[in-house]
Image (cartoon, rainbow, N blue to C red):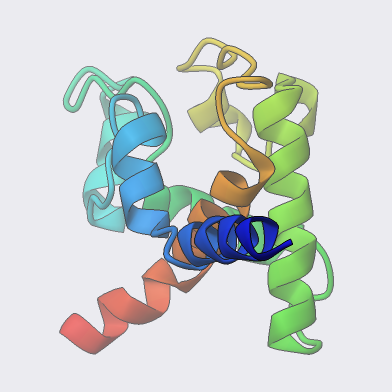
Length: 144
């Protein structure tokens, strides 16, 4: 019985120590740049047809802006809104489909649909990275 309790504590400790930023670095950073100024992104997509930056996928700051605008009740409780965004991210990452994308057509047409990540990233990792993404724009504001 004691061995089971110790094993559960180790697993629980690992889950609580999961860093959203580390998950981003491991699973997302190869395609999704963290941050590019919005005026530069606008020029890249609307004037240069993504030839200026040659992005592989939307940036994290683009995604967080659109997720917060398009998913759930953005004017409601922030914790509940973050849960709504997290559930959307899980669904999209496991079952990507351009029809579900939150990006504007001028942006999304520049990219291929991402490969499904089901079996490659756990729900716990998605929870951690979704929370990190959701809070990333607040962190950007603090750093300015």
